[in-house]
Amino acid sequence: MRLWIKDPIDILGQNSGRGLVVENGCIAELIATGSEPTSPVDQIYDASTHVVTPGLVNTHHHFYQTMTRAHPDAINKELFPWLVSLYPIWAKHITPENFRLATRLALTELMMSGCTTTSDHHYVFPAGLEQALDIQAEEAERVGMRMTLTRGSMNLSEKDGGLPPDQVVQDHDTILVDCERVIKKYHNRSFGSKLQVALAPCSPFSVTPELMRETARLAQQHDCRLHTHLGETKDENQFCLDRFGCRPVDYLEDCGWLSDRTWLAHGIHFTDDEVKKLGHACVGICHCPTSNMILASGHCRTIELEAAGCAVGLGVDGSASNDNSNLIEGVRHALMINRLTYDTAGVTHLDALRWATEGSARCLGRSDIGSIELGKVADLAFFRLDELRFSGAGDPLAALVLCGAHQADRVMIGGEWTVENGQPVAVDVAGLRYEHGKAAKQFLESL
Image (cartoon, rainbow, N blue to C red; front, side):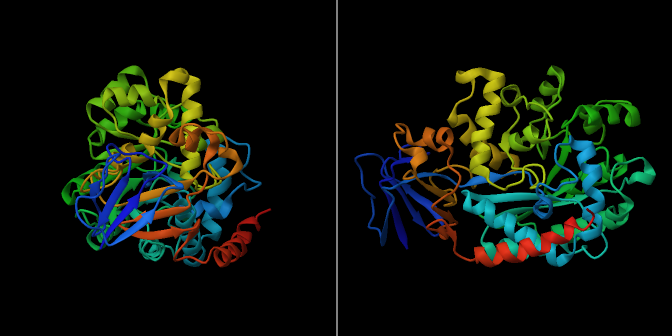
């Protein structure tokens, strides 16, 4: 079936003023202003009340943290004390059942914000949660989201000089065996695939150098991406100096991670030379503006990193360091915080939207999504401008960012509608809210 998405108010795509034609889940034709489709269409969707963008791509999250949003033990703290407060709570209360609900809620929330592809950095594996990535694969299929399953890991616990408690870490061999299992079961590198796999030791303060090196070897062997937290706080810099005798970027290089296979979460505290080194290696950087502001972690050097050669994408980060999973809101935050560094002309709404689409797709190593171009997968977000917040707006694309869009009216993933009239097609939102909220109460038992 050929579907003409006709006459949007505005569209984030070149030569497509009259919309686009979707066929077999892909963009088959771009319709320039004053033109019509070159071949007959089977159906027309009137997009005259919508601004259309590529589906947003989220490159860093922690789904399980939806269970501890605004947790009284953790609010108003920076990263290390925040983690120290929450690790024991997560270790005690995460189960396969509430992890499934946390995953479903995060996926749904993201999709309702216009997100069509996400990754999730899951690294907490208390006893009983060994099938966490399988649960996420099932829930992504259920919701309809495209996803990079990011198999995280921690093997450096408190007794070894790391930050996490013993109950949430796994040993080196167990981690590598399960990484291979997940890759073989879910990693699909074909065009338009719904599931891919990345390997993701958590951070320098929770994994050993040996695990970092072995993970890099495994990723190269199976052609998958690498992901970790790096350069998020000054505390992390000091930890690396004290334990490894070098700063985080040099540590990354020593572990064999300095390549275009890698994308990093946060990437805040880099020197000029480190920015050049990362850019030369084409390492991707996931900018997490909301989380960075909540935890007061600092400013990501987005413009310098991009100029040096890094792909810059966006991530909402965990729902306990952001407290929601709204990526279009994150686009607005990216614009605001970066203007404090680069002034009003230095970062535009188009830069922030590019980071959330093309830049994020590059971080995940995907060339089939992230932009409205001929032949790419039809992953699209549709936003209305009929709320009071948009009244008087002159530039529709700028209005999404400056006036603060926070929910997509419709979402299409691979040519299929997954959100209609602001509601997900495959999820009972009221039922999910009730079940998730009930499960989350367990995480307050420590108070």
